[in-house]
Amino acid sequence: MKIPIRQPRQQKATIKTVIPGPLSKALRQREDKHLAPGLQNFALLTGIAVKEARGSAITDLDGNTFIDIIGGIGVNGLGHSHPVYVQAIQAQVEKSSVGSFTSEPRAKLFEQLAEHRPAPALHRVQLYSSGAEAVESALRLAKSYTGKYEFVSFSGGFHGKTMGVLSLMGSDFKNGFGPMLPGCHIAPYADCYRCPLKLEYPSCGLACVEETRRQVKQNSTGRVAAFLVEPMQGTAGNVIPPKEFLPAIKEVAREFDALLIVDEMITGSAERVNTGALGTQESTPMWLRSGSSLVVAFRSAVLSPPIKSRAPSPGPIPRDLHRAMAEIRWRPPRRAPLSGLSMMRR
Image (cartoon, rainbow, N blue to C red; front, top):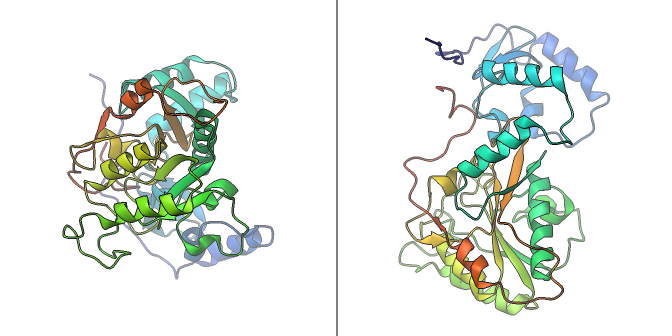
C-alpha cells in the first residue's frame, strides 16, 4: 500500500532572537544595495531572510521559525516545498526546463483544467506568469472579439500593476502614474459593510448595480467591450458581495452587449466559480482569469470558449456565445476561501 506524501503537521513558531535577527538584517542590507523599489511591503517590513521553508513554516537565517499565514498573497496553496511538487519539478528539469513546445505534462495539465472547468464552453486555456499578464490578455481578447475598446471595473478592485489593468484599479494606488488609458470606467462595488452609497442591504435593492448602469450610460461612448470584476475582492479587504450582485452585473453587461471577465485573483483556482460562491442565479463569465494559486509554476491562467477574434467592427454578441456565457451558476460559499494555509492538510 502506497503511503501518501504529506506536508508537516502541527508546526509551531519558535523565536530565538530579536526580529529581525542579526544574520537576516545583514543579508537584507546587502540586498538593499541593489534592490529596486516595488517589492511587496509585507516582505520588506518583516526584515527576515529565509533559510528554508516547509509546509506552513518559514525558518530564517537566525533560526527563528514563523507560521506563514500570507502564502505569498494567496499563491502558495500547496504550502512550501511540498514533496510531490519538488519531485515533479526535479523530474521535469532533468528532461527539459523550457516549456515553449508541446509536451506530455503540459497537454495533461490542459486536460485536467478542462475537466474541472466551471462551464462546458470554457475549455480553451492560456497560461501566464502573473495575474496582471493574464488580465491584460483577457482585455486584449475582449477588444479583439467585440471590436470595442471601453472597460468597466469596480471600486476597490485590484487586477495588477501593468498599465492597462492599473487604469482599471479602483483605488488611489495609481496616483502619480497618469495619464491612465482612455475608455476606463470604475463603478461602485457591492461592499455592504462600507457601502459607497451609504445605504443598507437588502433594503438598498442593490442600488450600486443601478448606479453602475447609470454611470456607464452617461460616461461611456457606447463601446464597452467588457466588465471586469472580482467575485470576492481581496486587496480591498476580503469583500464578499451579496449573492445577487454578480448575476445583476451580468445582466448589466448583457444590456450593453459587453462581455464579463471574472478575475479570480486571491480566491484561488476558480474557487468562487467552481464552488459557485454567489447565489443560485446564472452568471456569465465570458473569460475567467483563474487565481494565483491555480498552479505553482504558472501563477495564473485565462479560460475562454473557442471563438474567432479580431471582429471587423462592433456588433451584437452571437446567441450561441450568450448561451455559453450563461452556463455558470453561483452558490453561497460554505466558508470564506483561505490562502496560504487552506490546503496544508492535504
